[in-house]
Image 1 (cartoon, rainbow, N blue to C red):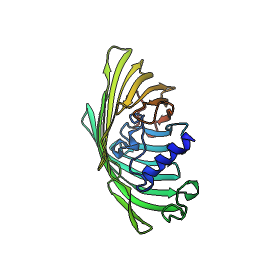
Image 2 (cartoon, rainbow, N blue to C red):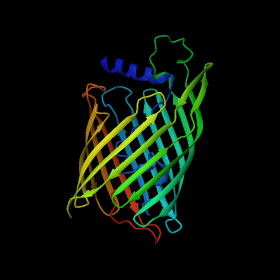
Image 3 (cartoon, rainbow, N blue to C red):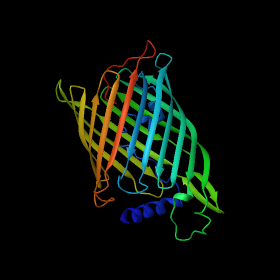
Image 4 (cartoon, rainbow, N blue to C red):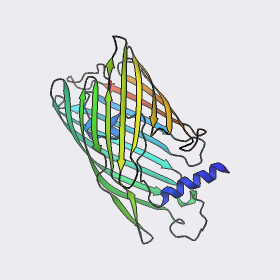
Length: 301
C-alpha cells in the first residue's frame, strides 16, 4: 500500500509537466555523449556503450532508464559523429530520445578542444491504463497522450590525458504541447557542467575526483560529487553523493584493452525517498580501432 501511495505521489508530480528533469546518469564520465555531443569521437576510436539504470527499486512505477550510443572519429581524427538512443520510463510515462551527433576537434597537443551539435526526436507517451486517478472522468487523465518533438543541442569539451571539462545543453528548445486545451510544458532546457581530473600518486595508484552540475529553469541546481581510486590503470573504486541526500559506491573494471564494465550502487537518505529504495546502474563500453588512425590506448575519460 505504501509503495502504491508513493508511486501516486511521484506520478502526480510529473503528470502535468511530463519530463521536467532528464534521466540521471551517475556513470557520466564513462560515456559523456549522453549529455554532451562534443564527446563524439573525442577519444580517436570507435566506441559503443550500453547502460541500464534502475532507480529507487521497490517503488511501483519507479524510474528505469536504458541508453545505447555509438560514435567514432573520422577524417584523421578531425571530426566525430555518432548516434544516441535513450528510453526513460516513470510510472505511466515512457519518454524516448533518438539523436545524431557531430563534432569538430582541434588538437592542441596536450589537450583537444571539441565543439559538438546534435539533432533528434523526443517522443513522449503516457499510458492512461496504468494510472489510478481520483476522478476517472477527468479528460486530462483518461486517455493516452503520445506526441513527438524535434530538438537540437550543443556542447563544448576540453580533454587532456588527465582531465576533462564539458559544458553542454543537450536539448536547446523548450517544448510545449496542448493537452485538453491546456498548454503543457513537456521539456525545459537543461544545462550541464562536467569536470574530471586524474592525479597520479605513483605508477600504480591514481586519484580521480569529478563533478557534474545540472541546472534547469525554475528548479534548484543539482550536483554530483565523486572520488575514485584507480589501480594499475585497470580497476576503479570510489564513492559519490548527489546533493548530499543520496550516497553511493562505484566500481569499474577494464576487462581487456577493448572492453570496460562499470557498476554503481546508490542509497537515498531520508531527505530523498528513504534508504529502503536503492538504485543500480550498469554500463558496458567497447572501444575498437576501425580505421588506421584510431588508437585504443589507455584513457581515463
